[in-house]
Length: 161
Length: 141
Image (tube, rainbow over all chains, first blue to last red; front, side):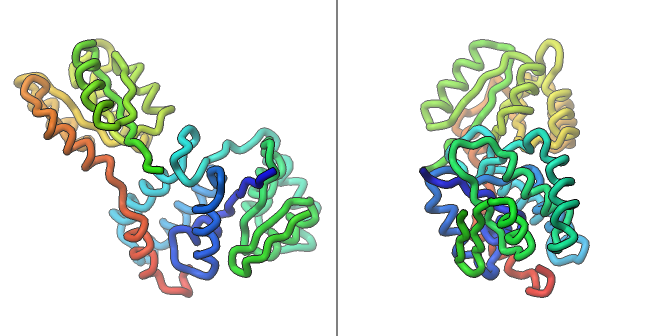
C-alpha cells in the first residue's frame, strides 16, 4: 500500500521557494507515484502570502499573476500530468476543525487554518493513507494525537502510526 | 510526462470546429469543442483550459459576452477571439477586456494561430518562479 501526501501551505511554498526543506519537498513531489494533494485552503493561503509580499513591495503585481498562473497550471482536479491535485474540502471538515480546536488548541499552538488542514486530512476518503507534510511542530503534535502520519521536510523525519 | 496543452474551440460553425479541432489535435493538443457561448462557458468553468479560441459572432451568448464572463469570474484561461470581416471594433472591445489575441476568421493563417496559442499557453518556468521568490529576504518568509 502506498501513501498519498497532503501539503500544508508552508510545505507547498518549499516547492516554489528556496528555503529549509525545499529539496525534500521537491524530491517528494518528483518521486511520488501519485499526484501530491493540496486543498483550496492551501492555494488560498499561498495567494495570501503572495499578496503580503506585494503589500510589502517585495514582488510586483505582474509577478504575482505569473506565479499564481503557474500554481494553477501545476495543480488540477482532472489531470494526472500535473504535480498537484486539488482535493475538495470534504463535508464536515469545518465541524471537525472546530472539534480539533476545542480539544487541542489549549495544549498546542494551532491556528484556525491549521485545524482545517488537519480536518481535511482526517475527512479525506482515500483508498491509501494520507501523510500530512508539515514543518509545523504544533501541527505535527496535533496530527500525532489524531493518528495522522506526518512528514517533516525540514528534518526529513517521517512519523508513522 | 509532458502535459498536453488543453484547448477549447467555441464556434457555432461545425466546419470551423472540425477543421480547427483536427489541426490542433494533430499537433498534440488536448482539444475540446463547444458549439455556442453557453456551452463554451460551461466547459471553461469546469475544464481548466490553457487557451480558448472563441468566435465573436454566435447566436445566444456571443464571444464578447463570454469574454466578459471569463474576466469577471476570474477563469484562468487565455482567450483568442475570431472575428468576421469588418468586426474590428468588436475585437478592440475584446482586447480591452483582456483577451490575448484576435484573428479574422476568413484570413487566419493557421501557423500564426498555432504560434499565438503556444505563446498564450506558456507559463513562467519553475526556475524563474524560484528566482523571483529568492529575492524575498529570509526574515519576510
